[in-house]
Length: 117
Image (tube, rainbow, N blue to C red):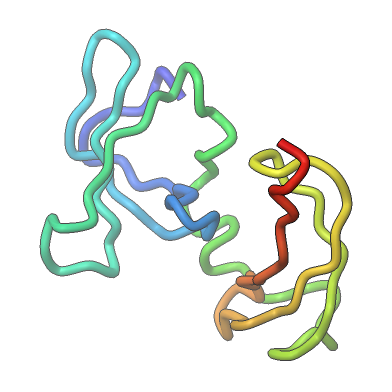
């Protein structure tokens, strides 16, 4: 990622976990990029991201955001899946609320028990 330059295209995982095609619009010496999501006309959703600490949020341009769904093609809105995400570790059941027709990426919702902390 340190070889990427201003103007390069990448797939970037947004704050909601979905990969979107994006352009690097600023690169700092300290390891930060400013990212502009190509599907957005205004800079309202531009974001800063560390390519040192958040490398998992970067992928080659269109390798995820425009890749056709290739597995689990039967999943649709209303399906249930098991997930284990870093923000809330541990397996849990989640309901699919949207499916991206271009990439097959899904958005899910799930219950989180916060009573134990």
